[in-house]
Image (cartoon, rainbow, N blue to C red):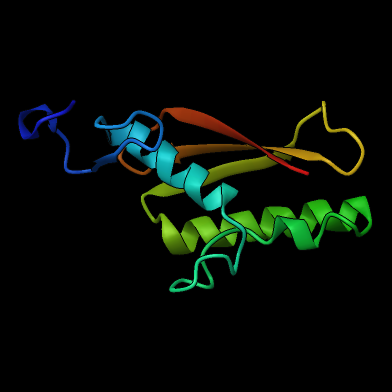
Length: 122
């Protein structure tokens, strides 16, 4: 279990994966990004605008769905995690049927290193 002396970065939170642990720095930003990407818009009662509306686009034409999902991801990250700059949002090659795998390439605004997160919308 983490203690206060383990926290060395002003950007930190409890880990969503490991009880009693903390995530800091870039891992904290990665966790926040995944929270945005995996939360369905409208599902958080006190923050109805938080999250991505990917599911409402999946039944439409593929080109329209992908464009809308990309736009929604970029808008949501700008609104909810301003410490991240989105570099690209692409569709993964292993997307099958009504399932869409999205790869988000990003960087923390405090450094130039690139990171990726993947999310599957089915």
